[in-house]
Amino acid sequence: MNELLAASGTDVAGTGRTVLTWLLLALVGVGAIPVVAGLAQFLVIPLHAVRNHYRETGPYLPNVAVVIPAWNEAAVLTTSIERLMGLDYPPDRLRIYVVDDASTDDTPAVLARCAARFPGRVVHLRRDKGGEGKAHTLNHGLREILADDWMEALLIMDADVIYEPASLRKMTRHLADPTVGAVTAYIREGSGDPQGITRFIGFDYLAAQAASRRAQNVAGAMACLAGGAQLHTRENLLAIGGQIDTSSLAEDTVTTFRTQLAGRRVVFEPHARVLAEEPAGIDALWKQRLRWARGNVQITSMYRHLFFRRSVHPGLGGIFFGIFWFAILLLPVAMLLTSVGLTGLYLLDSELAAEVFGAAVFVPIATFVFMITLTISVDPRTGFRVWREALLFPGAISFVVLLAAAFPGVVPLSGAAETFWTLFVYSWLVLCIPLAYGVRKLEGTRWGRPLAPLALYLVGFGPMMCAITVDAYVKEFRGAAMTWDKTEKTGRVTV
Image (cartoon, rainbow, N blue to C red; front, side):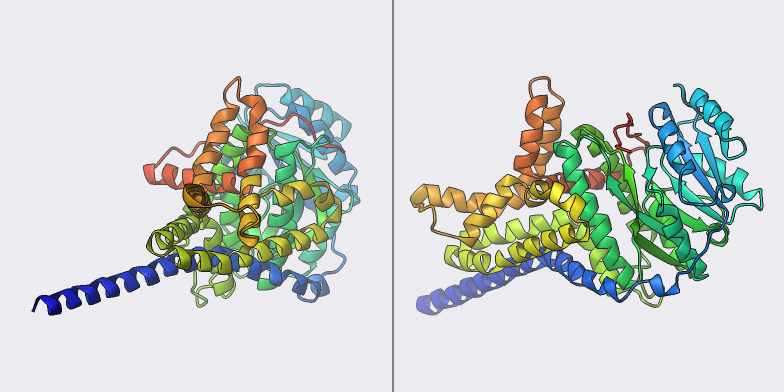
């Protein structure tokens, strides 16, 4: 009897171990979904050469009203307005409406001078009460603009954005197709003296806009119109309610979704290029991206009925778009699952963990190399300037971890050193997130400020974006106030 009980116990233990092993393998597999989704997205980018909207375009020069929300933008407004006035576009078909959100600097004086230089073409709209956010400021301008029948298309931009001469004309040509409701341009980081963080942003915009939005063009569903470069038809604005949503921190994404759900197309025009000033410090970047990340969490809740339901919308409800959306939104969760799965496998069966990691690591390495190569190729001018940041986007430590995994045995380890290194490698996907938060805190100290840029290169810009996403989870869970932390602009864009 004792022998039977012992054998039975052994069978149960063996079954439990097998179940646990498969569970841990499943965690690693689920954690790999964002990598596979990223690869799938970039694989379709070359199709943009044949699957695009250019065959439906034509010469079309509607009356365009440009609306610019402005709060204390005296340092950048003059240059932006002058560049708009110099666009390759019929002067009598372009008007600029600057909505002054109760600025306390020289913004009113700057606008008075611009209005005097360009009478009838630059309009100053002043709000007596400010600080309610960009959407409220835009709606103040929209009420004035829509009250006049002159406007046929509306360009929403930020005060610091600089348009290349032919950019607006390249955008309006898509509106020749009546099925198109909105067009967005390619925003590039435009600082004249790009440093570490702005160079990372330069690559981030290259990947997220020039590359990723091409894939969204192919898929027929756009995630978000660039907040500083979005062109709408009058009909589209009226169809979505004649105003910008104020219930979310991602008003541009809500507008994008509403446009497509109303039956109109949203198109990305990669050859309409504009330059924008981006945060030069980690804390400023954190506040900007936290606003974006919280907005995406809010959008997910608002449109939870839409994802993976093609019957609601063939593009936004499609599998491709759904996987793409959640692969970004839930990337920190995937990283946690991967670390837990690998660490658990190591404690259960170190040899199996090594085999799984060794087999799986070539997927992110191959994806990483392919994504960087393709991303740089779509805009070589920017790509070759930020190639170091492209390589170190996941961080120098992650880069070393990947190389060590790809070429095991180069540095022979044994005993406690081998155990420590292996556990560090398997847990780095989780450790990098609090360390990225630590980099932000480091910048906030007097002694750590000069060290923060180096720490960013070590930990990585990608892990910092994941840390910001986690912060967004927490802020939304706690119901934190939706405050609009404006990015300070100083006029660093090179004209």
